[in-house]
Amino acid sequence: MHPTSFATSTTGSDLWGQVSGRLQPEPLSTPSTSGFWTVLLVVVVVIGVPALWLRSRVVVTVVHELGHGLVGMLFGRRFTGLVLRGDMSGHAVTVGPSRGAGRILSTWAGYPAPALVGATAVQAAGAGWAPPALGATGLVLLVCLVRVRSLYTAAVMVALTAVTGALWWQGGPTLQGAVVLGVGTFLVVGAWRHLGAVVAQPSPSSDPGVLARLTHLPAWTWNAGYVAVLAAASWWALGGALALG
Image (cartoon, rainbow, N blue to C red):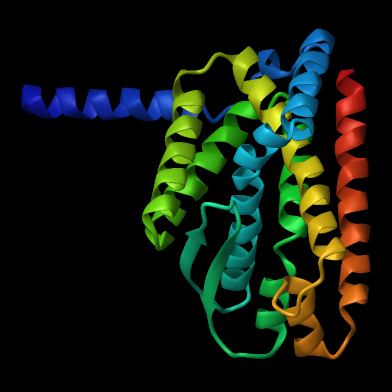
């Protein structure tokens, strides 16, 4: 074997070892009691201060729209576009039959997605699974970059992907656990705020309005279903959080 080939093989093996090592659970990433209360305080401030919420809620919008797109793919639709707007709203484009289970489920998936992802993140942080959670999140964001359909969307998605990747590769266990816990909590609470906005200002073009046209069930039944799912996700997240606090 030539020396150059041996070096290449060794380097590749070392790199794979580093990658696989960063995908393992890390007990030190589980937030301490003081860390939990610090993270909770930061999340309360970000959500409670209107100026901070207006700028940060794009993260909830990203998860909402990816929920539409990824669930649509699971049920046979093509996820072709992701658009975020400067007012922090957005939309996902899926291609497929105009009616049917795939269209209904992809439309339904938006509002539950942040709460379900957030609750999973809280549980992951509590179990020491922050590093693999960050790795999986970075991979999903990276794959979805090809779906962006505007410069603003590209800027947001590249920034989120870069920050997540850097935190996964370079961040210490304590920081990783705190960020996963904080983002998870933010997503759960943010999901309620997003749902509250659509309930307070119903629109035929909103997800519940579209579902009402697709199924002939009134929009309020879909909103009630959202409340049930968000409540279940919040209860699951609360259990994981209380175990830390």
